[in-house]
Amino acid sequence: MSAIVAQVEGRQVRLTSLTRVMYPSMRITKSQVIDYYATVGPSIIGQTFGRPVTRIRFPHGVGGQSFFEKNAPDGIPEWIPQVIINSIRYPVFNEVAAVVWSAQNNALELHTPQWREHGSVDRLVVDLDPGPGSGLMQCCEVALLVADYLAADGLTGSAVTSGSKGMQLYVPFPEAMHAQAVMNYARSMAGDLAAKHPDRVVATMTKSKREKRVFIDWSQNNPAKTTITPYSLRGKDLPYAATPVTWDEVRSGLTEQFLFTETMARIQEFGDLLAQ
Image (cartoon, rainbow, N blue to C red):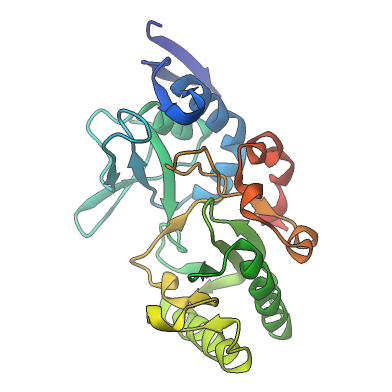
């Protein structure tokens, strides 16, 4: 298929190699990946707006060589803003067209920090990482413990599957916070829950302590770290996506089967969840 120029909300995005297979196990093409990102684009930019975006690019699809990219590449459209941090020029995706441009550049995964361009942290992330012998179902159980902990402090989070075995809870702040204060709160919460529920929760990275437990990775609130952007695809064998889920679904318990491609068919209905 020859190159085409797509009109995306008033922007022109040149699309090429649309028949390239990005997910060989299901023969999903670059054209389908671009269609997906164009469809969920409004929800994506609700998360990326004002945040530097790092990408994992798969020039030859899943199974081929991939690389993590921070710098805005040469040839990036001039209408995509950039922010310079420690000599790195990060792109900022404030428009759906920027998300489509990223997909055109074979970026399957989009990652963002918990702060926006001004540098202040505007949300807490609770990263739930299941250890050996545990999985998404156990993450749901711990997510409910975290939700109760947050509620006691007047905070409410939204749950998102990581597109893998884990889960993240995003907790917006009514006003921007200092990064160290957020880190301290996350570490204290993880320690408190690990002490109260030692059979379910661990707050340290020590692998020997994580058997059949869920690690609350409080360190993901470090300003230097990023998490998978909600609605982003993952560069795995199957086209899993980081999918926002309702608390009713969390209470019912989720399985790894939930991560399958059906999530893409229903992902749009969750477009407003993270804004609640």
